[in-house]
Image: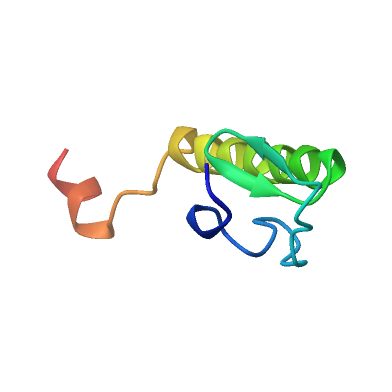
Length: 68
């Protein structure tokens, strides 16, 4: 992979990627392993939040309660 083919900044923190040192995981470039771990934790929390939002029943409107 050429230098021009990869992003210039870290996907998590936005720091400039060094020419000698960068970390590539799951299709993204990071400046350090810690940034990758932080990004994984953040995405896991968002996925859990979305899953909990889907499992919570939504209250039915007032008009539909009377019909049943």
